[in-house]
Length: 83
Image (tube, rainbow, N blue to C red; front, side):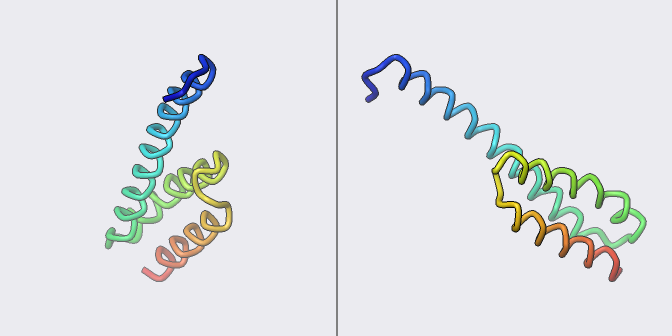
């Protein structure tokens, strides 16, 4: 257990940030999966900018690496254009 007041606060804030990051990452993964399973091209084209925005936000906050974000966006864009 932490001995200093500041380290106790740090543990508490880290837990809160971890929960927020996990929620945002899981939401983005769910949106990506929904986009991949969509069969209608118009629907997929409509969802694509929203999903790309979510991925960009994750990369900006260092929840995922920027290169991974680029790979995800590239694959999703290819997937939608192939439909």
